[in-house]
Image (cartoon, rainbow, N blue to C red; front, side, top):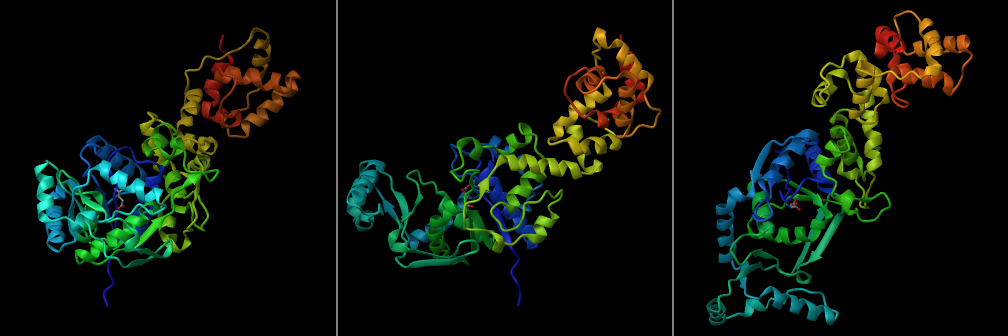
Amino acid sequence: MTTQKTKVRFAPSPTGRIHVGNVRTAILTWLYARATGGTFLLRLDDTDVERSKEEHAQALMADLRWLGVEWDEFARQRDRMDRYAQAIERLKADGRLYACYETPEELSLKRKTLLQRGLPPIYDRAALALTDAQKSAYEKQGRRPHWRFKLEHKTIAWNDLIRGPVAFEGKDMSDPVLIREDGSPLYHICSVIDDLDYGITHIIRGEDHVSNTAAHIQMFEALGGDIPVCAHLPLISDAEGGKLSKRLGSLSVGELRDDEGLQPMAIINLMARLGTSLPIEAYTHPAPLIESFDFGTFSRSTPKFDPEELVRLNAKILHQTDYSEILPALKDLGLEDVSEEFWLAVRPNLSRLREIRDWWSVAKGPVTPEIAGEDTAFIAAAHDCLPPAPWTEETWGTWIAEVKNRTDRKGKTLFMPLRKALTGMEHGPELNVLLPLIGPDKVSERLQAK
Ligand code: GLU
């Protein structure tokens, strides 16, 4: 028996930046591909020419690459129009697509009337009864048809990897429109044709697509193909359990990177485990997430997304990240000269990588030491009792104990003048870590500044 190789796809519409909700689908789809040794296809659903923009497509791919979500194959729908036309001809020939002439106003009136009568707003299939003469009369008026897919009135059932058994009744659904008046195909049919042609074995997407899936299953059948296994992810909510607010929901990966200064693995770790029974960990590599990936651990209930969790994870990840691995990101920050020693000393204190800039500028200078007139003698005394090199993170404690003894100062009057002399600021990185980073020469220089 040959087991079919897994093939999955992430199919964003390039109409904007990739945000928290859809990046989760991307990450989970990619993890599933890696966990099963399968293939990950990135497909751009760009048939909506008005809203799809090349700059969005480019940004989306850059965001995925930054996350490390690499795809094995790439497709875009606008390259496949001929193929869609061919499949559409077949559906027309088989009587599965029928021409409709209602205007949007007429359709909305029909919907309203049904709702007023307490009935579900299902399309009444009036167009199916049109005679050829009626159709040409409409055409003469200048109307162009849109085309609906004729659903079979039977039960549509599947076993969802997350939702378990799901069933819809064909008769409770409106025949979906697959072709617009201008002749362009809509997402539903393009998606099904692509899933068939690219041999997609599993469709992983948000639960907002559940009813689409019911219609798609009949399209797969009508086109004579295998129906992929489906996994519908519950949509994420905010920390209070409400619908993701505009701000959170529209937080893009680009903003998480550029404005929030997060590491890609913070996002990967959270998205991989959110809404599962597995703990959210701060792994520095995706390997453990790939190894443990299992749809059986996913809950059907709405997971809560808390951006603070991303910051907490980010800190934990930084605290464990090796020097060689952080080097490219340091370069991007313009910090080419950071040594391994410096990185190891500072990393436990960072929650966002960019904070290292403060450490770097305070340690390496230039710094304008601030020494108030009344502290001059105190600072000179402190200078006299600087411990001998080499310095470690213990040096600060040794030194301060000695300064305290010698000067009888304590608390803020002891620390603050030293901090201001060494860093030129009242707040900033911890002095015990900082002291060896500044080093004996610069410390001495700063304490003697006039
Ligand atoms: N372009 C659709 C979306 O972004 C794709 C859904 C899907 O089939 O995965 O919602």
